[in-house]
Amino acid sequence: MATPGVDPTSYPPTARTTPKRTRDRMSYDRTAVHAVLDEAYHCVLGFTVDGEPRVLPTLHVRVDDTLYLHGSTGSRPLLAARGDGLPVSVAVTLLDGLIYGRSQFHHSANYRSVVAHGTAHLVTDEREKADAMTALVEKVAAGRSADSRPPSRKELAETAVLALPLREVSLRARSGGVIDEEADLDLPYWAGVVPLRLTRGRPETDPGVSAPIPAYLSPERSPWLDPPILRGEHVLLEPLGLAHTDELHAATADPEVWRHLWRPLPADAVATAEVITEALAAHDRGERVPWVQRCALTGAVVGSTSYYEVDPRRRSVAIGYTWLGRPWWRTGINTEAKLLLLTHAFEELGAVRVVWHTDLRNERSQRAIERLGATREGVLRMHRQRPDGSWRDTVQYALTVEEWPNAQRALRERLRPTAPTA
Image (tube, rainbow, N blue to C red; front, side):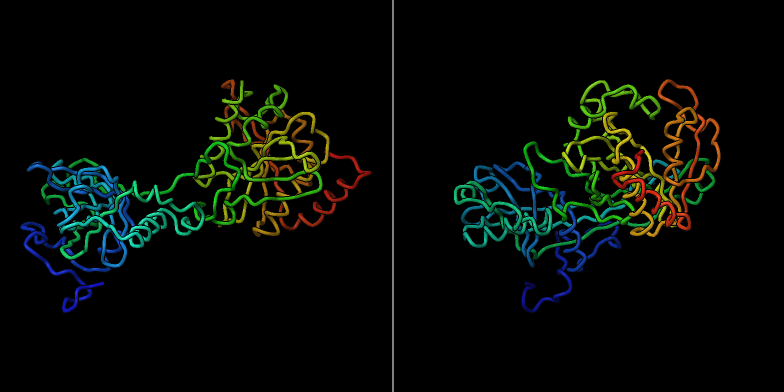
């Protein structure tokens, strides 16, 4: 809570928080200060030990007008904070961009940095300490404290928490573009801003974990880029992951499976993991939506397929990067997988066009695509390079939303038990 008698919207400037230069970049606004403290993870604690300066990177979390700092009970600042407390300075920084000037002197950075001064005290109250640690976990991911084991009494005893009341606080920030000298404006050098931001990568599941990745760790995406589980009588499509590596490699380690694909046959499971990692990286970039294919009857991993060239604005998507183990060719798995993907595209996403590309040499793939009801639209000459370096002519097919009802009926008819399959 703000100190009684003090403007609740801002922190009062002091000698330590009033700069001698660039005062226009300073702010004492409470809301702006709190926003930086809550967003940032980069925190440095400064203090003095035996007359010498020390800095220590640490985790922090703000609760109301108190900053809590995490540490070990054996660390020197935590030991020194007993009793009368420890005089400290804390810096929390967000780097927002790099500024490239025409001159070296005017290279700079866009940033937001909070500096707090004061006396930090060791938290000894068990309830306050537990609440601070819960707040730290919640800062990592909202909802995580209820989705993990709380600390034991022994673990609490081994952990130290410092509390720093936010009283003497300032925010320095720079935003905007290049500030070059007028005499330099005609120099033949690029100038501008390169934005920087901290983003979450794909969660990497620890070995032995069977629980799914929690929703609060999954980035919010357009439904066009979100691979839902798609279930059929013959095949189950689920989001592709590295956990599928061994089974996927065993099912598809066949030169014939990879003969017309975009890369050579993976030599071992490590190489198959590289294929999967490549697909996941493309998904993170918004370029692919990869699934693994399971046999619905046995649960065995049998192949993989993807959406790519995902274009929500034009309501178009391509189906490809498909490879299926040879024992499952000419079964209902490929046909039903395409039916599930087409149904999701046309009826859930609202697509108006679905595209396929295949090597002109791959006649088997062309016949399979034509059996789906797609129309051959032409040949893209020297469209891609094959793994051997030769140039591939690509045949392009498409199915439109107007053609979808007839194609859907035909696919369902082909999946009847007495009907032939693809």
